[in-house]
Length: 371
Image (cartoon, rainbow, N blue to C red; front, top):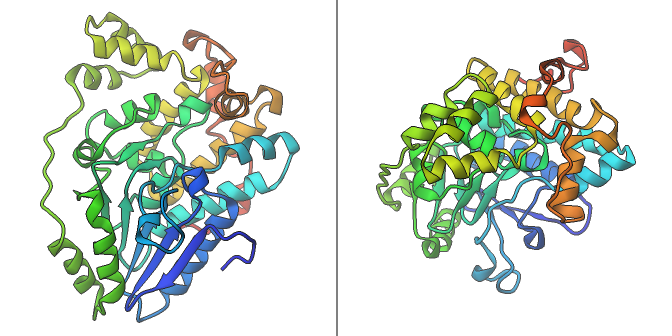
């Protein structure tokens, strides 16, 4: 494991299961560069271990003493460490680019892992936390789950493979979640294809312990053990027709106009939410989702690396939408971001197009090894 202290990832071997616990409760398990390295190292080690049949992921919370059952679950992962993004960008720290390179490589590793992975997606599951959970064998949510890809709120876009998994949600759900950053609960997540099964939060510890203590002869046996102990879950939730119609339209301006024309409260609330987001990144995000529908995971993650590089390097740091968005939300906390441009109608298509031009040659791309 990474030798930096304190350690925020606990990687343990059960009888035949690899167990990863995110343990940074003071930050709702927001991912640091060290945590990404530790998770990656554990997964690579277990991938080649014939005795490990399955890997399970969970988060910790602030309650209880370390080592007690009450310490675990509560929140899975709130995303990446956005304060680090802000400070590293302003300092010109190369660790910022390393963070995204290693995080996206981890997202790819998880989705192409040769063994099943199960995630206990309790509490807050956002941004980078979603990147740890999508494309795996079993995604468990609870009545406490709060799931979102809220990046447009900070002048970013839904990364960590967000273009890939959001674009594969039914209908215009991907566009809606990507642009608004709306928080959804367990049943809606299941209906949208972003989770598989719901269980009571109070029963997670027992299931986790059962996984840890049981010897499995195969991955199939481990998955059967889980599924036999989880309830059948059906969800009839769907994206409201008025939002489906609006977010299917070709441009951000048309989406907003359709919402403005709607006489219902949901349309008006959604329009108001879009007007709080970065106009530039709304355009970039919509283009990302539409492009990602026809891309495989590796190519989509390479595209995201190019996009996130633009977020921090395309403009001077003082003019970065992402640095400004994080400042307003998490640094100064004035919740008054000064977006450039300030209006959706004023976004230059040529600037949007720049986000989809790689700053490096294919043979030099940091994620060129992904397949």
